[in-house]
Length: 341
Ligand SMILES: O=C(O)CCC(=O)C(=O)O
Figure 1: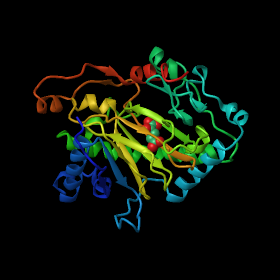
Figure 2: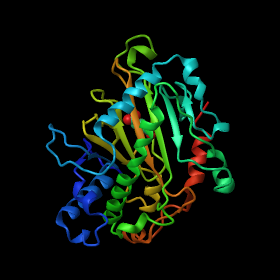
Figure 3: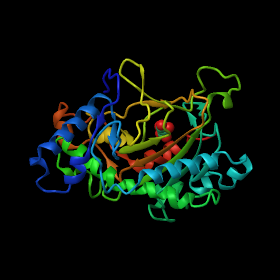
């Protein structure tokens, strides 16, 4: 369960990224330091920033090899701003629908959280699932991703975000160590063939949605937890909109920090950890007059993974499994089938 954290910790994970595949990793004090910080962050907040690039304001280590240059992240967000600025009819050419495997463009208000339309629009895409690949389990999400032709290169640039699979895997290896397991705990049939979801999301600024220039905007994305293992979020600079709920119910801001991704844990990790780590509620309110873009990469278990508390976590939490078995693909499908108007 989250604590009464007042801010989201920043973790320089470069020692872990450099050494997580090295058999001697647990003898390295720098790796152990990162593992300790991950454990604390996952127990206390379920959210943390990972530092990916050299940022003069933070003087932290460059993490090489994650595959996404800062300039490309900016290009993707610029392209997203251009796409969301297009006329509605243009955007609807790649409309999301159940027939398209829930892939494509969703208009403002189409996504529903706890009965209330979210004031965001988005392009949703998923790792490809070919017909029959997972039988009835995968049916709901079968399809190919739908990409805009305008602006050009949108698909090509955006798909670069999928190289975050490598960084996510390394973070998850660190989390496995933090739970007291082996670094390989989430490989193989758990998340060795990780499914992924990518969302490019746009949140209108305050005066564009309610027309009253009110100090607080409508909810851009209602309070929710993420479904899978870990999420990496890159947000527009200069707009504070993402909020994370602590144990007392206070909403703690997670402002954009240049050169970082926000990382948070999802429902499947909560089950695997037997509740040692919680998937923390978060929401988005863009109260700035500016339009905000965020790119969220969701690193998930294998689509057909059967997820239940790990024995090492059960033993550390009183010996009783707090959660029954969940199949990740079923969890995702149940969310998709109730998420939209
Ligand atoms: O816009 C954000 O900062 C986060 C988006 C989010 O929470 C989500 O898509 O699940």
